[in-house]
Length: 110
Image (cartoon, rainbow, N blue to C red; front, side, top):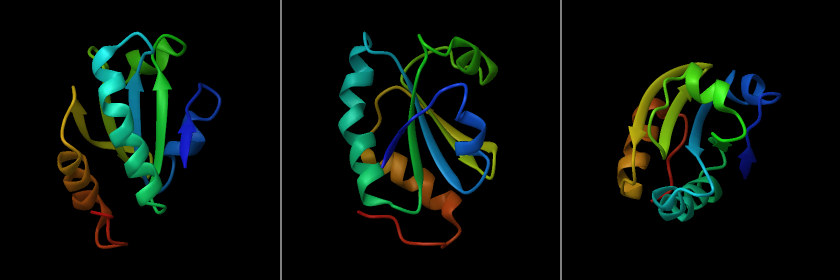
């Protein structure tokens, strides 16, 4: 399930487990290109929380995490940023980063 991230739920969503947050904006072409991949990962991996944060609506959160370009993907584990990816990347790149953080707690979907 894809979670819409806000100032109000960011801490709760990222505080535990494996979390992928997509920092994006509606006017961003590359963001639109990566959205189907993010949606697929969300549907295929129920053990991972996947969220989208609109940087236009929540610029303070983007600034807090040093997001300078979008799309930026941040990979959290138990509340701490563990990895990141900037720009449009293949699904396998995202899956490999998630798998590296997953510690065998469940297989990622192909």
